[in-house]
Image 1 (cartoon, rainbow, N blue to C red):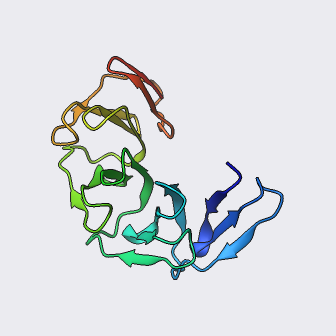
Image 2: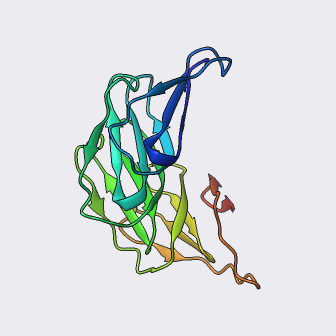
Length: 171
């Protein structure tokens, strides 16, 4: 795979098609800081960031469309488990889910106010989210989230998470 993308401050999105030797700047149509970018395939990708911004491309990054989430929270991570189902994590315990390739997003009830920075899904049902001194786990596609006992002292921010199997999560 020689194509890659990076996103950052002030709506910056850059793309390489030669394994990182050269990069071109794309037009994201936003000045909001972007914290994460994720591509489902060569054409369809999403980026998320400040002020609840969600943008999508269907043409490999040439054009980006902004979605209204109804949120003003900073969104930190976006991931898809297949072409249709994706999740976004953000501040104030925010987790959004789409089941229609990002055409619409639904806010899930996490019963957590912690900032969430990362997501990982093993399959359509099993997943986890990490945040400030918290790990949440779901076994039903995000309908219910259970707080996991991590008991760190001092408190810490979980900024990366990976579901390995139904019983193993690395953070």
